[in-house]
Length: 405
Ligand SMILES: NC(=O)c1ccc[n+]([C@@H]2O[C@H](COP(=O)([O-])OP(=O)(O)OC[C@H]3O[C@@H](n4cnc5c(N)ncnc54)[C@H](OP(=O)(O)O)[C@@H]3O)[C@@H](O)[C@H]2O)c1
Image (tube, rainbow, N blue to C red):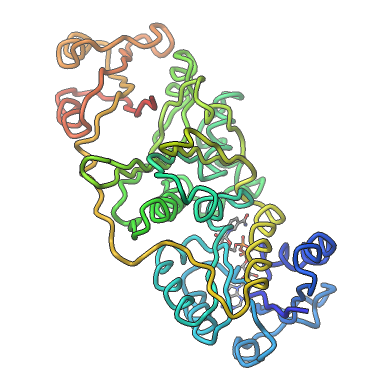
C-alpha cells in the first residue's frame, strides 16, 4: 500500500478519503499496490467519523513519517498550505492540490522544488473541479500550438446568470438563493467579482505558454453590474451573458491577451449551452481545431475525483518527477486596450443620435426590449481603449458588455 496523508478534512478532503474507499477497485486496477490514507490533518477532531482515528493536528507527524509518499492538500488559502506543501516537496513527498489560490500564486516555484526533489506537484482539481483539463493541457494537447482558451470557470456565477436568464429573478435575489444552497460563500466577492475565474484563467494561460501569467496582471471584471434588463436584451439578440476567462495568443507580437469579464455569448457557440453550476473550457489548437471540456466545476466528489487521479499518478511515479511545463519567467501580456471587439451598449434614448454618430455602423439592439427611455446598440469592432474614450462622451451609460464572436 502506498501511504498518503490528507491536509484539510473539509468538503474536498473528506471527499478524497471517502472516494478512495468507494472506488478502491477502480483505483487498484490502475495502481495494484493500492493507496491508503494514513493521516488526516485538520484543526478539528471528527468524533463521529469512521476516519476519526487517522486525524492528527501536527503536520510534523506526517512530514517525519517515512512511509508517507503522497500528500493531498485540500486546506485552501495560501498559509499554511504553502509552507506545508513546500516542506513536503523538499522531502521528496509528492503533493496534489485543489487549491487554485496557492497554485496561481506559487505554482512555478512549487513545481521547481518538486522537480529538484524527484517528486511531483499536481493540481488537476484547481481548475474546473472535476473536469480533466490540466492533464489534457500537459499531455494530450502537448503537440498543439494552443491559440485560444475560453472558459466558464466559476460555477457560482454561471448558476446565477442561468437563473437570471430563465427565471427572471434579480441579481440580489439570485445571490441570496445561491448562498442558501451553499453554491456561494457568505462573502461572495471572490466569485462575483471574477477573482476566482481570474486565478483559473491565469493557471490555464500559464500552461498554455509555459511561463507565468500573473493573475494580478489580468484585467478582471465580475458580474455584479449585470441587470435583469441586460439579460433580457442578450436573450433578445440570441445570446446569453456568461462570465468568461479568455486567453488568446497574439502570434505576431508573441504575447498573450488575457481577460476575465462578462460576455454576451452567441447561441451558436458551444459555451452558450453551459448552464447552472457546470463549467466548461473551450480550447482551440492550431491543428486540432476546437475541443471543449465540460462537467462539474465544483462539489465534494467531482473535485475529489480529480485530486485522487493526481494522487494515483504520483503513487505510480514515486522517486520520479511528473513534468509540468510552467516556468517562473513572467509572461508579458499584450495591452488590453489594443484588443478589438464589439460591445453591447445601453444609453439614454436622448443620446441615440450621439451613439449613431460616434459608433458609425452600430446596430440598434432589440428595440422595445428594455425601458422606453433606453437606446441599446451593438458597436462595430473597436479597440477597447478607443471604446472607453468614446463611452466617456455619453452622460448616461446604463451598461456596456463585451460581445463574444
Ligand atoms: N469545495 C469545492 O467544491 C472546491 C472545488 C474546487 C476547488 N476547491 C478548493 O479546494 C480547497 C478546499 O476547499 P473546501 O471547499 O474543501 O474547503 P473547506 O470545506 O473549508 O475545507 C478545508 C478544511 O481544511 C481545514 N483547515 C484549514 N486550515 C487548516 C490548518 N491550518 N490545518 C489543518 N486543517 C486546516 C478546515 O478546518 P476548519 O473548518 O476548522 O477551518 C477545513 O476542515 C480550496 O482551496 C478550494 O478553493 C474547492
